[in-house]
Length: 284
Length: 238
Image (tube, rainbow over all chains, first blue to last red; front, side):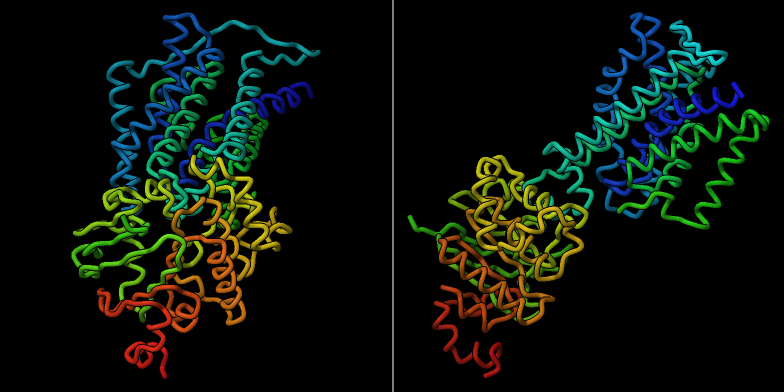
Protein backbone atom coordinates (compact mmCIF):
# COMPACT_ATOMS: atom_id res chain seq x y z
CA UNK A 1 0.00 0.00 0.00
CA UNK A 2 2.71 2.47 1.03
CA UNK A 3 4.68 1.56 -2.07
CA UNK A 4 1.66 2.46 -4.25
CA UNK A 5 1.18 5.85 -2.58
CA UNK A 6 4.90 6.59 -2.88
CA UNK A 7 4.81 5.62 -6.54
CA UNK A 8 1.81 7.90 -7.07
CA UNK A 9 3.50 10.90 -5.45
CA UNK A 10 6.81 10.23 -7.21
CA UNK A 11 4.98 9.79 -10.49
CA UNK A 12 3.26 13.16 -10.18
CA UNK A 13 6.44 15.01 -9.19
CA UNK A 14 8.59 13.45 -11.91
CA UNK A 15 5.74 13.75 -14.41
CA UNK A 16 5.62 17.51 -13.87
CA UNK A 17 9.25 17.94 -14.86
CA UNK A 18 8.76 15.64 -17.88
CA UNK A 19 5.91 17.92 -18.84
CA UNK A 20 8.12 21.00 -18.51
CA UNK A 21 10.76 19.32 -20.70
CA UNK A 22 8.11 18.66 -23.35
CA UNK A 23 6.75 22.23 -23.26
CA UNK A 24 9.94 23.56 -24.86
CA UNK A 25 9.59 21.12 -27.75
CA UNK A 26 5.90 21.89 -28.00
CA UNK A 27 6.35 25.67 -28.08
CA UNK A 28 8.92 25.52 -30.89
CA UNK A 29 6.66 23.25 -32.91
CA UNK A 30 3.65 25.47 -32.25
CA UNK A 31 5.33 28.71 -33.31
CA UNK A 32 7.50 27.67 -36.24
CA UNK A 33 6.43 24.11 -37.14
CA UNK A 34 9.92 22.80 -36.48
CA UNK A 35 10.58 19.50 -34.72
CA UNK A 36 13.62 20.46 -32.69
CA UNK A 37 15.87 17.40 -32.75
CA UNK A 38 18.46 19.23 -30.65
CA UNK A 39 15.98 19.29 -27.76
CA UNK A 40 17.63 16.41 -25.91
CA UNK A 41 21.09 17.86 -26.41
CA UNK A 42 19.96 21.09 -24.74
CA UNK A 43 18.41 19.12 -21.87
CA UNK A 44 21.80 17.45 -21.37
CA UNK A 45 23.50 20.83 -21.60
CA UNK A 46 21.19 22.08 -18.85
CA UNK A 47 22.19 19.11 -16.70
CA UNK A 48 25.89 19.89 -17.14
CA UNK A 49 25.37 23.60 -16.48
CA UNK A 50 23.64 22.69 -13.22
CA UNK A 51 26.45 20.25 -12.38
CA UNK A 52 29.29 22.72 -12.93
CA UNK A 53 27.52 25.62 -11.26
CA UNK A 54 26.96 23.35 -8.25
CA UNK A 55 30.52 22.01 -8.11
CA UNK A 56 32.47 25.16 -8.84
CA UNK A 57 30.27 27.90 -7.41
CA UNK A 58 28.42 25.84 -4.81
CA UNK A 59 25.06 27.19 -6.02
CA UNK A 60 22.32 24.56 -5.91
CA UNK A 61 20.27 23.84 -9.06
CA UNK A 62 17.11 25.44 -7.69
CA UNK A 63 18.90 28.78 -7.46
CA UNK A 64 20.96 28.29 -10.63
CA UNK A 65 17.81 27.64 -12.63
CA UNK A 66 17.21 31.32 -13.47
CA UNK A 67 20.78 31.72 -14.70
CA UNK A 68 20.41 28.56 -16.78
CA UNK A 69 17.16 29.86 -18.28
CA UNK A 70 18.95 33.03 -19.38
CA UNK A 71 21.90 31.04 -20.80
CA UNK A 72 19.45 28.80 -22.67
CA UNK A 73 17.50 31.79 -23.98
CA UNK A 74 20.64 33.38 -25.40
CA UNK A 75 22.03 30.09 -26.78
CA UNK A 76 18.68 29.32 -28.36
CA UNK A 77 18.36 32.75 -29.99
CA UNK A 78 21.87 32.48 -31.43
CA UNK A 79 21.21 28.90 -32.58
CA UNK A 80 18.06 30.07 -34.36
CA UNK A 81 20.01 32.45 -36.57
CA UNK A 82 22.82 29.95 -37.26
CA UNK A 83 20.77 26.79 -37.68
CA UNK A 84 17.18 27.64 -38.57
CA UNK A 85 16.62 31.09 -40.02
CA UNK A 86 17.68 30.32 -43.58
CA UNK A 87 15.97 26.92 -43.80
CA UNK A 88 12.73 27.82 -42.00
CA UNK A 89 10.68 28.11 -45.18
CA UNK A 90 12.32 25.08 -46.81
CA UNK A 91 10.63 21.64 -46.63
CA UNK A 92 10.50 20.01 -43.15
CA UNK A 93 13.42 17.71 -43.89
CA UNK A 94 15.82 20.68 -43.91
CA UNK A 95 14.87 21.82 -40.42
CA UNK A 96 14.99 18.25 -39.13
CA UNK A 97 18.50 17.83 -40.55
CA UNK A 98 19.74 21.19 -39.34
CA UNK A 99 18.49 20.72 -35.76
CA UNK A 100 19.81 17.16 -35.81
CA UNK A 101 23.25 18.36 -36.83
CA UNK A 102 23.13 20.93 -34.02
CA UNK A 103 22.37 18.03 -31.68
CA UNK A 104 25.33 16.04 -33.03
CA UNK A 105 27.65 19.01 -32.54
CA UNK A 106 26.56 19.58 -28.93
CA UNK A 107 26.64 15.87 -27.99
CA UNK A 108 29.97 15.37 -29.82
CA UNK A 109 31.66 18.29 -28.12
CA UNK A 110 30.08 17.30 -24.80
CA UNK A 111 31.36 13.73 -25.07
CA UNK A 112 34.83 15.02 -25.92
CA UNK A 113 34.96 17.49 -23.03
CA UNK A 114 32.91 15.78 -20.31
CA UNK A 115 33.28 12.09 -21.40
CA UNK A 116 30.27 9.85 -20.94
CA UNK A 117 30.94 9.16 -17.25
CA UNK A 118 27.80 9.29 -15.15
CA UNK A 119 27.47 12.23 -12.82
CA UNK A 120 25.08 13.27 -10.10
CA UNK A 121 24.35 16.30 -8.00
CA UNK A 122 23.79 15.55 -4.34
CA UNK A 123 22.48 18.62 -2.58
CA UNK A 124 21.59 16.58 0.49
CA UNK A 125 18.29 18.21 1.42
CA UNK A 126 17.02 14.92 2.86
CA UNK A 127 13.49 13.60 2.68
CA UNK A 128 10.09 14.36 4.07
CA UNK A 129 8.52 11.35 5.73
CA UNK A 130 4.82 10.77 6.29
CA UNK A 131 4.30 7.42 7.92
CA UNK A 132 6.36 4.97 5.94
CA UNK A 133 6.51 7.10 2.80
CA UNK A 134 9.65 9.12 2.20
CA UNK A 135 9.79 11.66 -0.58
CA UNK A 136 13.10 13.46 -1.31
CA UNK A 137 12.77 17.21 -0.89
CA UNK A 138 14.64 17.71 -4.18
CA UNK A 139 11.83 15.88 -5.97
CA UNK A 140 9.19 18.05 -4.34
CA UNK A 141 11.10 21.18 -5.33
CA UNK A 142 11.49 19.87 -8.88
CA UNK A 143 7.74 19.36 -9.16
CA UNK A 144 6.98 22.81 -7.73
CA UNK A 145 9.49 24.55 -9.98
CA UNK A 146 8.02 22.80 -13.02
CA UNK A 147 4.55 24.11 -12.16
CA UNK A 148 5.98 27.56 -11.53
CA UNK A 149 7.74 27.73 -14.91
CA UNK A 150 4.62 26.51 -16.69
CA UNK A 151 2.52 29.22 -15.02
CA UNK A 152 5.09 31.91 -15.82
CA UNK A 153 5.12 30.78 -19.46
CA UNK A 154 1.32 30.93 -19.57
CA UNK A 155 1.16 34.40 -18.09
CA UNK A 156 3.88 35.51 -20.50
CA UNK A 157 2.08 34.12 -23.56
CA UNK A 158 -1.37 35.42 -22.65
CA UNK A 159 -0.77 38.66 -20.74
CA UNK A 160 2.25 40.41 -22.25
CA UNK A 161 2.61 42.16 -25.60
CA UNK A 162 5.61 40.03 -26.53
CA UNK A 163 3.82 36.83 -25.54
CA UNK A 164 0.78 37.78 -27.59
CA UNK A 165 3.08 38.57 -30.50
CA UNK A 166 4.48 35.02 -30.22
CA UNK A 167 0.96 33.61 -30.41
CA UNK A 168 0.08 35.93 -33.29
CA UNK A 169 3.18 34.86 -35.25
CA UNK A 170 2.33 31.22 -34.63
CA UNK A 171 -1.19 31.79 -35.99
CA UNK A 172 -0.31 33.97 -38.98
CA UNK A 173 3.20 35.21 -39.53
CA UNK A 174 2.40 37.49 -42.48
CA UNK A 175 -0.49 39.18 -40.67
CA UNK A 176 1.61 39.67 -37.52
CA UNK A 177 4.26 41.38 -39.64
CA UNK A 178 1.59 43.76 -41.03
CA UNK A 179 0.71 44.68 -37.42
CA UNK A 180 4.29 45.80 -36.84
CA UNK A 181 5.61 42.60 -35.28
CA UNK A 182 9.24 41.81 -36.12
CA UNK A 183 8.57 38.16 -36.86
CA UNK A 184 12.23 37.20 -37.22
CA UNK A 185 12.91 38.44 -33.69
CA UNK A 186 9.80 36.69 -32.37
CA UNK A 187 10.82 33.39 -34.01
CA UNK A 188 14.32 33.55 -32.55
CA UNK A 189 12.89 34.49 -29.16
CA UNK A 190 10.50 31.52 -29.29
CA UNK A 191 13.34 29.17 -30.13
CA UNK A 192 15.30 30.75 -27.27
CA UNK A 193 12.43 30.17 -24.83
CA UNK A 194 12.02 26.56 -26.04
CA UNK A 195 15.71 25.88 -25.57
CA UNK A 196 15.74 27.76 -22.25
CA UNK A 197 12.89 25.60 -20.93
CA UNK A 198 14.68 22.43 -22.14
CA UNK A 199 17.80 23.49 -20.22
CA UNK A 200 15.75 24.38 -17.15
CA UNK A 201 14.14 20.92 -17.27
CA UNK A 202 17.63 19.40 -17.60
CA UNK A 203 18.81 21.38 -14.58
CA UNK A 204 15.83 20.20 -12.50
CA UNK A 205 16.18 16.57 -13.62
CA UNK A 206 19.89 16.67 -12.74
CA UNK A 207 18.90 17.50 -9.16
CA UNK A 208 17.00 14.22 -8.80
CA UNK A 209 18.56 11.67 -11.20
CA UNK A 210 22.14 10.79 -12.21
CA UNK A 211 22.99 11.62 -15.82
CA UNK A 212 25.55 11.56 -18.63
CA UNK A 213 25.94 13.76 -21.69
CA UNK A 214 23.84 11.17 -23.54
CA UNK A 215 20.91 11.29 -21.10
CA UNK A 216 19.20 14.05 -23.07
CA UNK A 217 18.16 11.55 -25.75
CA UNK A 218 16.05 9.63 -23.23
CA UNK A 219 14.17 12.77 -22.19
CA UNK A 220 13.82 13.91 -25.79
CA UNK A 221 12.04 10.64 -26.59
CA UNK A 222 9.86 11.07 -23.52
CA UNK A 223 9.05 14.59 -24.73
CA UNK A 224 7.88 13.19 -28.05
CA UNK A 225 5.64 10.67 -26.31
CA UNK A 226 4.27 13.44 -24.08
CA UNK A 227 3.59 15.76 -27.02
CA UNK A 228 1.70 12.99 -28.75
CA UNK A 229 -0.22 12.24 -25.56
CA UNK A 230 -1.15 15.85 -24.92
CA UNK A 231 -1.36 16.98 -28.53
CA UNK A 232 1.30 19.07 -30.26
CA UNK A 233 0.86 22.79 -29.87
CA UNK A 234 -0.82 22.79 -26.46
CA UNK A 235 1.37 23.62 -23.41
CA UNK A 236 -1.24 22.46 -20.86
CA UNK A 237 -1.58 19.23 -22.82
CA UNK A 238 2.16 18.75 -22.45
CA UNK A 239 1.93 19.06 -18.68
CA UNK A 240 -0.94 16.56 -18.54
CA UNK A 241 0.95 14.22 -20.88
CA UNK A 242 3.97 14.50 -18.58
CA UNK A 243 1.87 13.56 -15.57
CA UNK A 244 0.49 10.51 -17.37
CA UNK A 245 3.97 9.37 -18.34
CA UNK A 246 5.43 10.01 -14.88
CA UNK A 247 2.65 8.07 -13.19
CA UNK A 248 2.90 5.25 -15.69
CA UNK A 249 6.64 4.86 -15.15
CA UNK A 250 6.49 4.89 -11.38
CA UNK A 251 3.47 2.65 -11.02
CA UNK A 252 4.59 0.14 -13.67
CA UNK A 253 7.98 -0.06 -12.00
CA UNK A 254 6.29 -1.69 -9.00
CA UNK A 255 5.29 -4.74 -11.04
CA UNK A 256 7.38 -4.75 -14.21
CA UNK A 257 11.20 -4.69 -14.62
CA UNK A 258 12.31 -1.09 -15.31
CA UNK A 259 13.89 -2.10 -18.63
CA UNK A 260 10.45 -2.74 -20.14
CA UNK A 261 9.09 0.71 -19.38
CA UNK A 262 10.43 2.49 -22.51
CA UNK A 263 8.89 -0.34 -24.52
CA UNK A 264 5.51 0.25 -22.89
CA UNK A 265 5.83 4.00 -23.50
CA UNK A 266 6.38 3.46 -27.20
CA UNK A 267 3.56 0.99 -27.50
CA UNK A 268 1.33 3.71 -26.07
CA UNK A 269 2.81 6.21 -28.53
CA UNK A 270 2.03 3.95 -31.47
CA UNK A 271 -1.48 3.20 -30.21
CA UNK A 272 -2.29 6.88 -29.80
CA UNK A 273 -0.91 7.69 -33.24
CA UNK A 274 -3.14 4.98 -34.67
CA UNK A 275 -6.28 5.78 -32.72
CA UNK A 276 -6.20 9.52 -32.03
CA UNK A 277 -3.32 11.18 -33.86
CA UNK A 278 -4.30 14.69 -32.71
CA UNK A 279 -3.44 13.80 -29.10
CA UNK A 280 -5.64 13.03 -26.14
CA UNK A 281 -6.18 16.67 -25.28
CA UNK A 282 -7.27 18.55 -28.36
CA UNK A 283 -7.29 22.30 -28.45
CA UNK A 284 -10.63 23.99 -28.06
CA UNK B 1 5.49 70.44 -50.93
CA UNK B 2 2.54 68.39 -51.99
CA UNK B 3 0.09 66.78 -49.62
CA UNK B 4 0.81 63.34 -51.00
CA UNK B 5 1.31 60.83 -48.19
CA UNK B 6 2.45 58.07 -50.54
CA UNK B 7 4.41 58.56 -53.74
CA UNK B 8 5.42 55.59 -55.84
CA UNK B 9 7.94 56.31 -58.56
CA UNK B 10 8.68 53.90 -61.44
CA UNK B 11 8.31 50.86 -59.19
CA UNK B 12 9.43 47.50 -60.56
CA UNK B 13 8.94 44.22 -58.73
CA UNK B 14 7.98 40.59 -59.17
CA UNK B 15 8.36 37.04 -57.99
CA UNK B 16 11.73 35.31 -58.32
CA UNK B 17 12.87 36.18 -61.81
CA UNK B 18 9.42 36.97 -63.18
CA UNK B 19 8.82 40.70 -63.41
CA UNK B 20 5.21 41.71 -62.76
CA UNK B 21 5.32 45.46 -62.16
CA UNK B 22 6.78 47.57 -64.97
CA UNK B 23 7.34 51.07 -63.68
CA UNK B 24 4.34 52.01 -61.56
CA UNK B 25 3.76 55.68 -60.72
CA UNK B 26 1.08 56.30 -58.13
CA UNK B 27 0.19 58.99 -55.59
CA UNK B 28 -2.10 58.95 -52.60
CA UNK B 29 -3.30 62.29 -51.24
CA UNK B 30 -3.89 62.89 -47.55
CA UNK B 31 -7.50 62.44 -46.39
CA UNK B 32 -8.51 61.14 -49.81
CA UNK B 33 -9.72 57.76 -50.96
CA UNK B 34 -7.64 56.51 -53.86
CA UNK B 35 -8.49 53.33 -55.69
CA UNK B 36 -6.57 50.93 -57.88
CA UNK B 37 -8.79 48.89 -60.17
CA UNK B 38 -8.02 46.26 -62.73
CA UNK B 39 -8.96 42.76 -63.72
CA UNK B 40 -7.55 39.55 -62.28
CA UNK B 41 -3.85 39.20 -62.94
CA UNK B 42 -3.29 42.88 -63.67
CA UNK B 43 -0.71 43.08 -60.86
CA UNK B 44 -2.83 44.81 -58.19
CA UNK B 45 -2.00 42.36 -55.42
CA UNK B 46 1.67 42.33 -56.44
CA UNK B 47 1.65 46.12 -56.15
CA UNK B 48 0.20 45.87 -52.63
CA UNK B 49 2.83 43.31 -51.64
CA UNK B 50 5.56 45.60 -52.90
CA UNK B 51 4.09 48.58 -51.02
CA UNK B 52 3.89 46.55 -47.78
CA UNK B 53 7.34 45.04 -48.28
CA UNK B 54 6.48 41.36 -48.56
CA UNK B 55 7.96 41.56 -52.07
CA UNK B 56 11.27 43.36 -52.65
CA UNK B 57 11.47 46.57 -54.66
CA UNK B 58 13.66 45.86 -57.69
CA UNK B 59 13.77 49.41 -58.94
CA UNK B 60 12.11 52.70 -58.19
CA UNK B 61 11.01 54.36 -54.98
CA UNK B 62 8.20 54.08 -52.45
CA UNK B 63 8.08 57.37 -50.59
CA UNK B 64 5.90 57.50 -47.49
CA UNK B 65 5.66 60.86 -45.74
CA UNK B 66 8.76 62.04 -47.56
CA UNK B 67 10.91 59.03 -46.63
CA UNK B 68 11.90 56.23 -49.01
CA UNK B 69 10.65 53.06 -47.35
CA UNK B 70 11.35 50.70 -50.24
CA UNK B 71 14.15 48.92 -48.36
CA UNK B 72 12.30 48.54 -45.03
CA UNK B 73 10.84 45.19 -43.84
CA UNK B 74 7.02 45.03 -43.52
CA UNK B 75 6.95 45.51 -39.74
CA UNK B 76 8.95 48.75 -39.97
CA UNK B 77 6.53 50.05 -42.59
CA UNK B 78 3.68 49.26 -40.18
CA UNK B 79 5.52 51.19 -37.47
CA UNK B 80 5.54 54.21 -39.82
CA UNK B 81 1.74 54.06 -40.01
CA UNK B 82 1.34 52.16 -43.27
CA UNK B 83 -1.35 49.63 -42.34
CA UNK B 84 -2.94 46.98 -44.52
CA UNK B 85 -6.23 45.13 -44.27
CA UNK B 86 -4.96 42.10 -46.19
CA UNK B 87 -6.68 40.06 -48.85
CA UNK B 88 -8.41 37.08 -47.25
CA UNK B 89 -8.52 38.93 -43.84
CA UNK B 90 -5.62 36.89 -42.35
CA UNK B 91 -7.11 37.06 -38.85
CA UNK B 92 -5.53 35.36 -35.86
CA UNK B 93 -8.27 32.74 -35.91
CA UNK B 94 -7.49 31.12 -32.56
CA UNK B 95 -7.44 34.48 -30.73
CA UNK B 96 -10.50 36.31 -29.45
CA UNK B 97 -11.89 39.31 -31.28
CA UNK B 98 -10.49 41.54 -28.54
CA UNK B 99 -7.02 40.03 -28.85
CA UNK B 100 -7.15 40.49 -32.63
CA UNK B 101 -7.99 44.17 -32.17
CA UNK B 102 -5.29 44.47 -29.53
CA UNK B 103 -2.69 42.96 -31.88
CA UNK B 104 -3.67 45.64 -34.38
CA UNK B 105 -2.35 48.17 -31.87
CA UNK B 106 0.96 46.38 -31.44
CA UNK B 107 3.24 49.23 -32.52
CA UNK B 108 4.38 51.68 -29.85
CA UNK B 109 2.73 54.52 -31.79
CA UNK B 110 -0.64 52.72 -31.82
CA UNK B 111 -0.51 51.43 -28.23
CA UNK B 112 -0.66 55.01 -26.97
CA UNK B 113 -4.07 55.42 -28.65
CA UNK B 114 -5.45 51.96 -27.87
CA UNK B 115 -8.50 53.12 -25.89
CA UNK B 116 -9.44 55.91 -28.29
CA UNK B 117 -9.09 53.67 -31.34
CA UNK B 118 -11.09 50.91 -29.68
CA UNK B 119 -13.97 53.34 -29.07
CA UNK B 120 -13.77 54.39 -32.71
CA UNK B 121 -13.90 50.78 -33.93
CA UNK B 122 -16.91 50.10 -31.69
CA UNK B 123 -18.71 53.18 -32.99
CA UNK B 124 -18.12 51.92 -36.53
CA UNK B 125 -18.96 48.27 -35.85
CA UNK B 126 -21.17 48.07 -32.73
CA UNK B 127 -21.60 44.34 -33.35
CA UNK B 128 -17.96 43.65 -32.47
CA UNK B 129 -18.49 45.00 -28.97
CA UNK B 130 -20.88 42.12 -28.19
CA UNK B 131 -18.49 39.55 -29.64
CA UNK B 132 -15.23 40.50 -27.93
CA UNK B 133 -14.59 37.10 -26.35
CA UNK B 134 -15.52 35.06 -29.39
CA UNK B 135 -12.73 33.32 -31.29
CA UNK B 136 -12.21 35.17 -34.56
CA UNK B 137 -12.12 31.89 -36.50
CA UNK B 138 -15.69 31.05 -35.50
CA UNK B 139 -17.24 34.21 -36.98
CA UNK B 140 -19.04 34.62 -40.28
CA UNK B 141 -17.32 36.05 -43.34
CA UNK B 142 -18.79 39.54 -42.94
CA UNK B 143 -17.96 39.72 -39.23
CA UNK B 144 -14.43 38.60 -39.96
CA UNK B 145 -14.02 41.43 -42.44
CA UNK B 146 -15.20 43.83 -39.72
CA UNK B 147 -12.58 42.44 -37.34
CA UNK B 148 -9.93 42.79 -40.06
CA UNK B 149 -10.90 46.42 -40.74
CA UNK B 150 -11.12 47.10 -37.00
CA UNK B 151 -7.71 45.56 -36.48
CA UNK B 152 -6.31 47.81 -39.19
CA UNK B 153 -7.85 50.91 -37.59
CA UNK B 154 -6.36 49.94 -34.21
CA UNK B 155 -2.94 50.57 -35.76
CA UNK B 156 -3.60 54.34 -35.94
CA UNK B 157 -3.03 54.22 -39.70
CA UNK B 158 -1.70 57.26 -41.54
CA UNK B 159 -2.58 55.32 -44.67
CA UNK B 160 -4.97 52.38 -44.58
CA UNK B 161 -4.73 49.98 -47.50
CA UNK B 162 -7.58 47.63 -48.38
CA UNK B 163 -6.63 44.67 -50.52
CA UNK B 164 -9.77 43.21 -52.16
CA UNK B 165 -12.07 43.74 -49.14
CA UNK B 166 -15.12 42.44 -50.98
CA UNK B 167 -13.52 39.18 -52.08
CA UNK B 168 -15.55 36.12 -51.07
CA UNK B 169 -18.38 38.12 -49.49
CA UNK B 170 -22.09 37.92 -50.29
CA UNK B 171 -23.43 40.99 -52.19
CA UNK B 172 -25.20 42.37 -49.10
CA UNK B 173 -22.00 42.15 -47.06
CA UNK B 174 -20.01 43.77 -49.89
CA UNK B 175 -22.31 46.78 -49.54
CA UNK B 176 -21.75 46.83 -45.77
CA UNK B 177 -18.00 46.86 -46.26
CA UNK B 178 -18.23 49.72 -48.74
CA UNK B 179 -20.52 51.64 -46.38
CA UNK B 180 -17.88 51.24 -43.67
CA UNK B 181 -15.19 52.53 -46.04
CA UNK B 182 -17.39 55.53 -46.89
CA UNK B 183 -17.85 56.28 -43.19
CA UNK B 184 -14.08 56.17 -42.74
CA UNK B 185 -13.73 58.58 -45.64
CA UNK B 186 -16.04 61.03 -43.88
CA UNK B 187 -13.85 60.70 -40.78
CA UNK B 188 -10.89 61.79 -42.89
CA UNK B 189 -8.98 58.51 -42.92
CA UNK B 190 -6.51 58.35 -45.83
CA UNK B 191 -7.13 55.15 -47.77
CA UNK B 192 -5.94 53.17 -50.73
CA UNK B 193 -8.50 50.71 -52.01
CA UNK B 194 -7.65 47.85 -54.35
CA UNK B 195 -10.74 46.24 -55.81
CA UNK B 196 -12.11 44.11 -58.58
CA UNK B 197 -15.53 45.61 -57.99
CA UNK B 198 -14.86 48.59 -60.26
CA UNK B 199 -18.34 50.03 -60.12
CA UNK B 200 -18.54 50.34 -56.34
CA UNK B 201 -14.93 51.47 -55.94
CA UNK B 202 -15.27 54.32 -58.40
CA UNK B 203 -18.56 55.34 -56.78
CA UNK B 204 -16.96 56.09 -53.43
CA UNK B 205 -13.39 57.07 -54.43
CA UNK B 206 -11.83 60.47 -55.09
CA UNK B 207 -9.11 59.39 -57.47
CA UNK B 208 -8.48 56.20 -59.41
CA UNK B 209 -5.82 54.26 -61.23
CA UNK B 210 -6.54 51.54 -63.76
CA UNK B 211 -3.97 48.77 -63.88
CA UNK B 212 -3.35 46.22 -66.64
CA UNK B 213 -0.35 44.03 -67.41
CA UNK B 214 1.64 45.45 -64.52
CA UNK B 215 1.33 49.06 -65.65
CA UNK B 216 -0.92 52.00 -64.88
CA UNK B 217 -3.05 52.41 -68.01
CA UNK B 218 -5.34 55.27 -67.07
CA UNK B 219 -5.55 57.59 -64.08
CA UNK B 220 -7.82 60.41 -63.11
CA UNK B 221 -10.58 61.71 -60.87
CA UNK B 222 -12.94 58.84 -60.04
CA UNK B 223 -15.96 60.64 -61.54
CA UNK B 224 -14.05 61.14 -64.82
CA UNK B 225 -12.97 57.50 -64.91
CA UNK B 226 -16.58 56.42 -64.62
CA UNK B 227 -17.31 58.29 -67.84
CA UNK B 228 -14.15 57.10 -69.60
CA UNK B 229 -15.04 55.02 -72.64
CA UNK B 230 -12.24 52.51 -72.20
CA UNK B 231 -13.04 51.95 -68.51
CA UNK B 232 -16.71 51.63 -69.35
CA UNK B 233 -16.08 49.07 -72.04
CA UNK B 234 -13.47 46.97 -70.30
CA UNK B 235 -14.52 47.06 -66.64
CA UNK B 236 -18.06 48.25 -66.31
CA UNK B 237 -19.43 46.26 -69.24
CA UNK B 238 -21.51 49.18 -70.52
